[in-house]
Image (tube, rainbow, N blue to C red):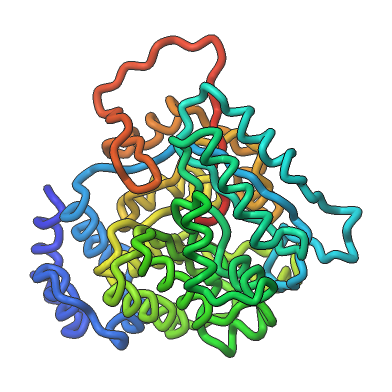
Length: 397
């Protein structure tokens, strides 16, 4: 039975409450749900109900297709001027002995390591330090573009852009135009955390505000650029904070249409200042993916990171609205393992990732950053390899 048939059966369930039935009818009619209905889904929506709605939307948009890409990641530093309570990755400047600071040449050497490899994207994100300023990143992006024009540069979050633009005394519009002219292709979704100002002040004080995060994306969208968005969930926020976060994204997307993908990020409590906060269950993870798919009706894609939530949960998520599990990985990025992800030494070849997608009846498509099809793996036959080829997965997009 198809997704629409399962939704029709759900609507015939006499035990379904009138308010949940009304939401299901809106989904069937492709109508937008309200803020209050979003909160209601968190409060009353059971997993099977949410999965039925989210999978219907997913299959209406993408059928069985599941996307992934091949990329590599550069983390300039794990030192940072900010002190986010949930972060297991960064170290304050006073903890310099526990960190790293790559030079321009060291970063460029990482790019050169992938000469001849079929990667399509370099993802650059890390801590915030004074030496990594506008001039530094403009030169880095320009060097990468000159050296490998086909390589898409996806780099820096609004947290980093806000800092470097303020330091350079330029406005967001001027700064983003300079970055685009230097070779920036798109911007990832990190740094959003949770938009509610009260919660944000408790977990990520002093970094860019919620509105500044949105303003930087808006300026990028005005230039015709595409970007992603994230939400950190499962810590001290409440359900209405999650819906408020998605509502602000939905409003900006109505205005600009520049967002490609929404990525819910699960709070992990290993080795950070919020280790006392318990993590939410896999059930809540799946519910959250599903509600995101239902609420964000103007976002094309919902992404889950297999390295953060585990391979099995990533497979499950493909039935709860997710159509992208990002990419292959070679165990070099430290964002996931330092936060306590299940995959402590994550590595998966393209063949393994394709098989993971096919195991749950989905259709694997390798994409580029802008979701152009690179390779359709539906009927692809892999040649026997003496050694699997691994590729790096970016950190939060």
